[in-house]
Length: 482
Ligand code: ADP
Image (cartoon, rainbow, N blue to C red; front, side, top):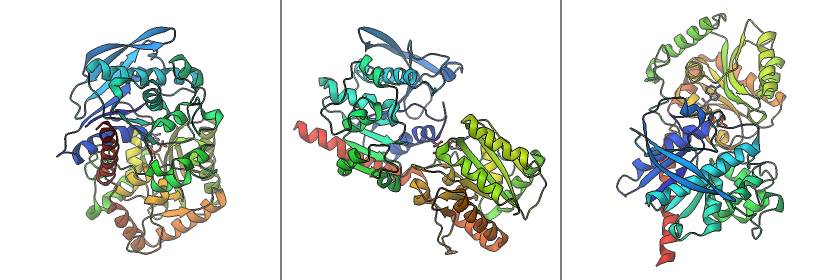
């Protein structure tokens, strides 16, 4: 079975958010699950400027022509060396070396990612490698699925189409013209609402044989007006093809026992080392060392989705309680400013670090007692899973993957986190008070830490579910042909 796996970012090469974690670890996990069956899974990502500036070991593979009406544009394709899963980079005229992975100019991103999607299909033809399935992720690579459906090229007559939704509201607004420029017409005969007929994610969903949302709860939520981004009605017509598969994390990368960055490695049996990491980070940040005060961490994109504003207001409202906080995040300047205000307001107990810093993120996972994830919506979320592995108790909003992974049942044999319902500072503050109360009971807290560390969010189960889906789609196309 040949699988073409397309994504905008992939670890360990380029990362902005959780999509990179998934694109980096799901393909090898599927390869492992399928070890007895033949599977040839290949990952393709754009040759982003940030990658061009590194000297990654790679070799030139080929050049392809992409129809960009009324002409053709070239794309150059490279293959990275020493990757377990073959990984290609697509670069060329329309992939500016100066462009970040995502820009705020959606029309520019529209052209870049449609070009990338189309070039990835050309690559298959150039290599004479027929994919049995194209697995697209989010709006950036959705045009590839739509192109397969529209152009019906004989080369791809047995190619199935799967899309994973990591974040539904990012539909690819502003990319309508780009689709047209690459010859992709509006999906007029679909059940899609008119406004969605020429946007990348909706047309990709329309083209897809199967649709995966990244958690079972998110798969249900997107059928409602609150979470459906205007597509809930359409998705309801596709319920038979829609399912939720929880993302996993790669424990070879996220493990406090083997983590090279943290000063004091630890596991369930050496939790005192976690306290040493806490002391160290408090020293590093020049915060007072108060073992009885809960240290709250936050590691997040600064986006309204993530409820950063709720967190700041809730912390302000419980300023009379004992807590310290370290916030790491970058993104929306208004939210960055709000987080920095908290730092200025409570210089004796808050630090806000406004950058993308994977090393510091690991130190926070290892040092914090509690990780705050007050997302307004959270398709899956990886930070709560990483936190649990590091014995850091997650406090999240009861939505999407947070609801599917955080057990808040007050049963000491399984209790491992805190959930709140309403996306309000008040509800969050109440739940923070619950966490502070639980933290005062060190036996209970330690039990919760062990419960959290014993959870298994490895890719194995989810990769098996994806592989099963791959087989289902494969059978559909191959039965049809017989
Ligand atoms: P999303 O993909 O919506 O941003 P996830 O929880 O799925 O959220 O994944 C976020 C990933 O990005 C995690 O691996 C987290 O550790 C990492 N991350 C987020 N913000 C930062 C930051 N400022 N510095 C380093 N890593 C970050």
